[in-house]
Image (cartoon, rainbow, N blue to C red; front, side, top):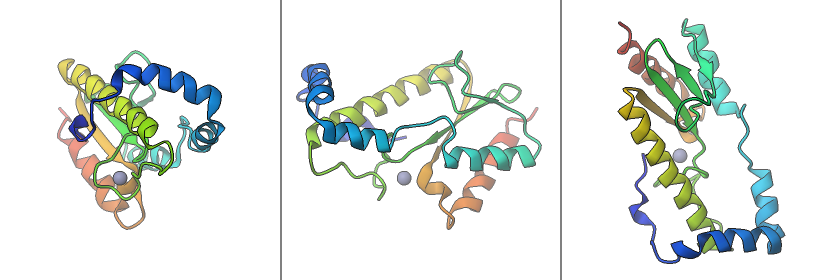
Length: 161
Ligand SMILES: [Zn+2]
């Protein structure tokens, strides 16, 4: 998981004002946002799901009762999977995570907030005894896909009683 330490804390206080302003005055941001909006059934998530289903795993999706509403939940194994988009979740040192050159500060704040939120939810889930598996979008590109999926399977198998 990425650490938020790479972001400067300066300007944080004004984050909400920034957001409000941006929403009203900056259609550029909004359209960018809309084009990348997170949906429940993003393709990378389906990949993971179908693979695990074919291996005999059964699961729930987007369990709202759990912190962070994990994408895939295995109650039986007390494990959850988050399939993270590299941009929205600020995947460090990843070529798919590039802060746009315009409104840079706004984007830094936005992504930092997402990262902090991820860390917070992860802590809660671990506190409840859940195994957390974070899969990055870039790890599901064709060249790394099978390696990644096998890794997830092994991690789940270890939770098998
Ligand atoms: Zn990535």
